[in-house]
Structures are given as C-alpha cells and as structure tokens.
Length: 141
Image (cartoon, rainbow, N blue to C red; front, side, top):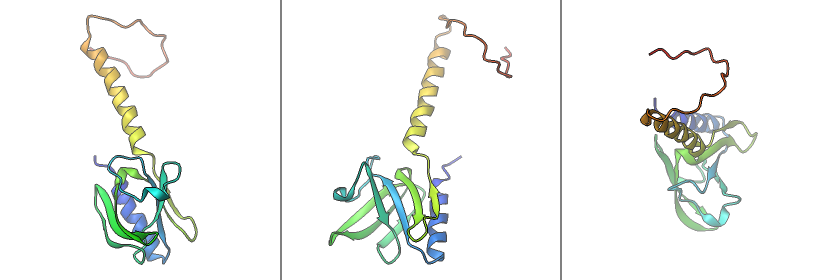
C-alpha cells in the first residue's frame, strides 16, 4: 500500500483551516530535496506557517507540498517532500499530529531485508543455531 502520510497531511490541514486556526508544519530540513530558508533552521528543523493568508500557490499532492512565501521580506519558493514533514498542528491550540520520521523507518526495513537476503543467498553456510526464543511460528519445508 502507498503511504498514508499525504492523506493525513491533507486531512489535518483542511481540519485546522476549517476550524479557523493557523496550520504550522514541523519539517526535517535535512531531508533530501527539501527547499526551505536555511537561515531559519534550528537543530535540523524548521516550523512553517502554511495558512492560506501566509502563502501563495500552495500545492499538496502525494509526493510533496510546495508554496511561495516571504521570509524576512525575501520571496522564496518552498518545497517539502511529504516524508520530511514531522508534524502538523494548529498554532492556537497545538491540536494536530506527529509523524514517525520516514527515513528511519526505511533504513530499518532495508537493514532487515539485507540480513534476510544474505542468509538466503548463502545456503552452503549455515549460521550457528540460536537459542529458541519461544516463537509460535514454525518453518515447514
């Protein structure tokens, strides 16, 4: 299945705006392809006001969100892949949601796949037997 993050982002954005609050995003500024004003990045993150009154040409699809805004009086186009969004919340009351960092999830999954591949590609070398961990699953050949 595809990621549910873009759908949740759109839903929370609309919910916050419909309730006449100001949507803010917490973004991982170090995520690949992120384009944000680096002078406002703190500890690898930036908080962006994405209310309709603060941005122009706002677009959000299944891959990323983008918009034009002014930072310190300077116009800038902002581009944020959905995986870089760490949270979305309403400034007025903090209501919103926090997302699991996508990069870490993928790294863990890739590590597991590599370990499984190495074992399955080397049938002539048998790993030392480990102590049973009490799994309820059984391998049937």
